[in-house]
Length: 142
Figure (cartoon, helix red, strand yellow):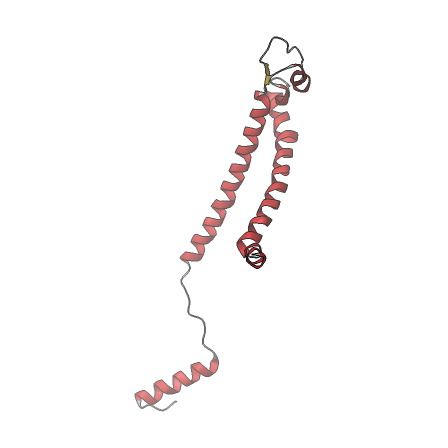
């Protein structure tokens, strides 16, 4: 069983998947920073200078706080600003992945459109083929 697990874990697909997950986590942090530190302040300025992360609705009358962190301490809240931020994160990641896959598909199409050229024969094989053709036709080489 240990040998089977070792073979499974060392297969290329599993290692590739692990690398993809690690890079994806790092990429997720970059996108999160891009959205929260660059895009959301711009969007917040356009809609009145407010921070989306503090957009919430208290679900009970006991919630009177002005910030989301304080409101969560007072009771249940509907944090739609946080949801909006995460949705924008998703849209940015989806768009970037779309661009990457679009680029990969273009490269594949270019490769498929190229005529498949036959690999060049070694010099000795080319010369022997020439001699064979000359002998078959009964000619001598000029």
